Image 1 (cartoon, rainbow, N blue to C red):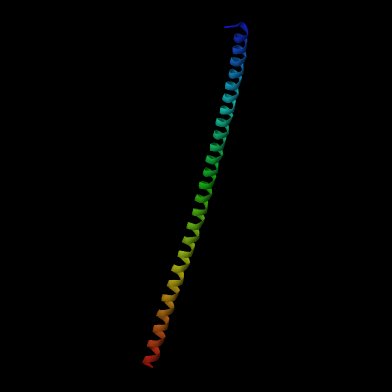
Image 2 (image 1 turned 60 degrees about the vertical axis):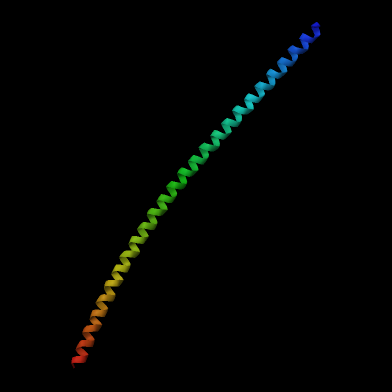
Length: 94
């Protein structure tokens, strides 16, 4: 082989090595970007779950309050019906 061929091969090897380094840098950057994205997604999921748990607790508290109100109303209705029955019984006796 002629000497100039060796020089060209060295230039090609250096160029290919540079390209490989650049590809590896881009690969590492892509991996870092993906990891950052996964971290952000995980944080968003965590915050969403915490928010939903908080909202669920509030809804359960509201439900218990409404159930208590329904029980009170039901008792009032029962008392009112009882009173009405007594009034009717007294009226029918008279």
